Length: 197
Image (cartoon, rainbow, N blue to C red; front, side, top):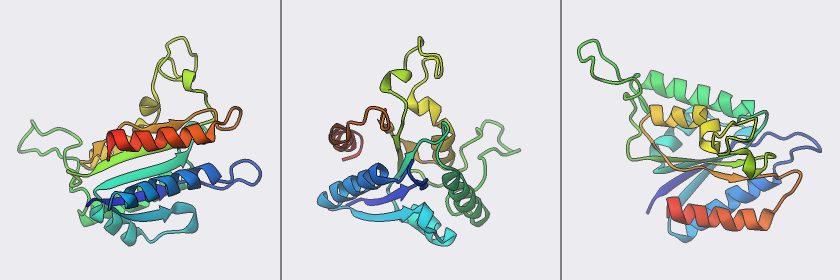
């Protein structure tokens, strides 16, 4: 049985981003994991959190999923605040990470090897207004062939820096101009089956 932490990083904006799709995807993942006998805890960043409780949830979890909308090409600012507070406190405590991994005694040790989250897995699930063909296509101007995983490397690198294995992300595309919610939910279930369950 695995322990799963699902973090809802949605930030509400009246009439524009109410969070229903992100909430639905959190619920889909929670039910899917529970049906497999996993224990699931959730954090809804916007409703507030206790930093020490969040560190303990990360220590407890085998799998961590962040469900987030994409605002101005990144997660909402409340997610960055959450990461800064939780991981900085964890560094001070040396609970999720000890340091950056390098030592003066052993110059072969690489930057990013001081984490303590080995054996844990991290996955991003994102809701984009961007269409799917904006990614992985050199002919597209904005991302110039980069993937969703490339676009969100700052978030995933945080977990990799702490030793977690990074799983392929999931994305719902074109959620404002051309939504296909039922298909997105079905694809999400398949993605969870293929990369985790």
